[in-house]
Image 1 (cartoon, chains in turn orange, blue):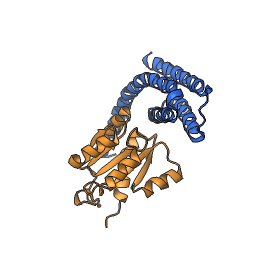
Image 2 (image 1 turned 90 degrees about the vertical axis):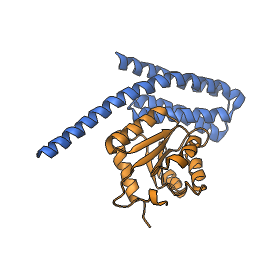
Image 3 (image 1 turned 45 degrees about the vertical axis):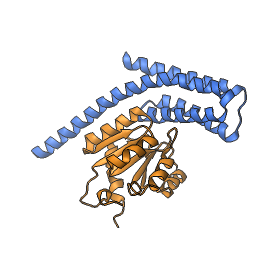
Image 4 (image 1 turned 180 degrees about the vertical axis):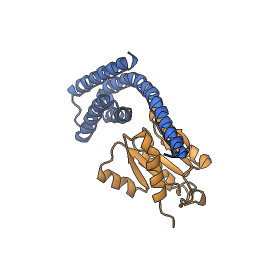
Length: 138
Length: 126
């Protein structure tokens, strides 16, 4: 994990990229994370757009919708893990398909957490912060 | 309660009210967008006879999106009806069963979804 993305007890989560093809949910997540936790949130509508934005934005964490047309969440994560500049950025999946076996599959792909949809916008920030704090510091 | 605690409680309440208001606004936009997406669902259904599984996949993705977002905004009936469209698409992709009645089945599900979206929109604007 790069130094800038390495969480520890004193490093709050500052920036998040949220990737989802649903524009209304992008707006909800941006509002929720920024209003409740003051996190700098950028959003984009596809895995392809995310891969273009990531090298310049360099967020602390990526929240990635699973089902998207074109490059879906898992395929986007795979591309990130294959890129030396992006592979250290922690990724959390957001999905309506959060059965235990699906969660296991997502974690085995390299995600650091899975958040179920629907989510409570008032609780989303604390859930994301909880996952951020749980990512191990070597 | 101390004045600092009072202040924090007020901020938290204010934040919740602000978020509630924003959710109503965004939810209204979601309903408007979903009305437009009903035409997309109908087009995808028409295309099943020529595009087969590709159209079923498109139906799955769009219905999944409507389902998930509907649930976030508290439109549970819309979410459930979109979920039925999604499930039918998934089942037929798995079984590769594309028969002439399939388009009619999707059409009736989409009609039900359209009626619910329309009713919900009307209730919100009245």
